Structures are given as structure tokens and as C-alpha cells.
Length: 323
Image 1 (tube, helix red, strand yellow):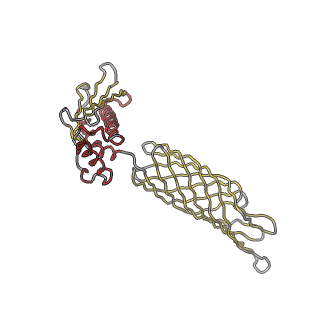
Image 2 (cartoon, one colour):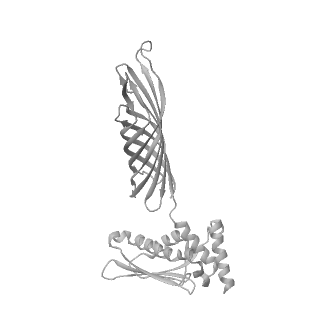
């Protein structure tokens, strides 16, 4: 018994360390019983179960995980039961197939079966000793299947045009930038922006050129639909800016330039549309209150500064990887 448990532990450890390269094509034996749902096409359900769980559908047996469905004759409800030979446990769940309609019921039933079996096999991650009665290779294959289906962070990288309006005399500045978005599980995203913008507000004595380089980081809540995505959250934007006076008459008017740092708490909102799974077109809005240590003066009075409220917008395209 001790040797068997040691073999299971070693097999599971190899999967964890090596990513199960040698098991990439291995399949877990799984018995699928649809006798209680005679109106559901068996082939459609079994095909999706095989693909998602990397399983081989086999006859029921003593050391085979079994998933069964029983459909109610007078309603669209179905009861699912998993008897897992790998963990020695069983679990049940009821689902409502009415929302899917007759055409979508096989897919909905298959997805519910997949989730229930995957939930049972995932216990091998928490308690590997549960698999002591099963062949080590089969237990390792089941764990590899669970890990393959685990949600992975998605990374989006894109380019965008951007414009900000500062209400303390600086006026609008516009430019371009890059955005990196890390989509984490539990509907959390972390967008990171790097932008360069330029503006040139005018005055009676000339103008002031403004160059703004900024970095923004935010923590956002994410809501996703089939081809759309919405992000809302807050963070911080800051960087450095250069102000340079441009007099109308350089012979009679003195001008100078300086650099200043700035920082701002900000609220961000972004909406994206996905024409494909990997490509996204995104519209973003942000706003906040900027703080800066220096101001620009024209004719002795404060004319331009980055202290005060601002609002911005961006339009860009992004490509996603992972997820």
C-alpha cells in the first residue's frame, strides 16, 4: 500500500514539474451513461466530453470514472451523477436544459458533465492520497486534464491614439501610446498604459508647447460577453511633462522651459468589441485630479499647469494571447 501511494505521488509530482509532456496525448478512461436521456443525441455529447476532458469513452468498470444523466420525463430538468473511481467519491447536480432549447441541449448537458467530472478530478490536486486505489498513470492523466482546463491569465497588447484635456490652462494634449492588459481570473484586469502627448495652448504673447509622458496602472473589474468586454476601476496615472515658452517676438519677450513631475488618482472605463477571439477594438475613458510641483507663467501670472481635473479618451486595437 505504501509503495502504491508513493508511485501515485511520484506520478503526480512529475505532472506538476514537467507539465505532463509525456501525457499530452494520453486520455483518461471515462464511462458516459445517457440511458436516462433517450432524446439527447449520444454522439454529440460524447464528442464534446472527449475533447474537453481528453478522455476515452469506455464501458463502465470498477476503476473507471462514470458520469450519468437522467432527464425528467415531464420537464427539461436533468440530474447528473459522477461516481469517481479515482477519488472514491460521488457527486450529484441538477441542471435546467430549458434555456438551451432542443438544439442546444446536447451541448449544455455535455458542458455540465464536463464541469462535474473536472470538479471531482480536481480533488487529486488537493489530496493526492485519494488516488491511491487507481493506477498512477490514470490518476496523473486526470490531473493533467484538470490543469489543462484551468483558467489561464490572458495578456492583451495594443496600440492606441489618446487625448487628454487638462482644465488648468494646459488645454488638450494628444498623442499615441501602448497598452498592456493582464486579464486575471475572477473578472479582474490590470491595464498598464504608456503614452506620449503634445499640446500647444496659445496666449497674447505667444504659446507654450507641452510634452507629456505618462504611465498609468489600474485595477479593474471585468465583465465579458460573447464578443464584448467592459472594464471599470481605478488606479493612478503619472509621469513627467516639459513646458517651453514660444514667444511671438523673441527679441522683446523672454522665454524659458522646464520639466516637472506629476501624479493623479484616476477612474478608468473601457469597452471593447472582439471581431475575433484574439483581436479587439477598444474605446477607453479616464479622468481624475492631477498634482504637479511647478507651474508655467505668462506675463507674471499662472497660465499653464498640470494641477487640477482632467479627462481623457483613447481608441485602439489590441491582440490577445493566452486565456
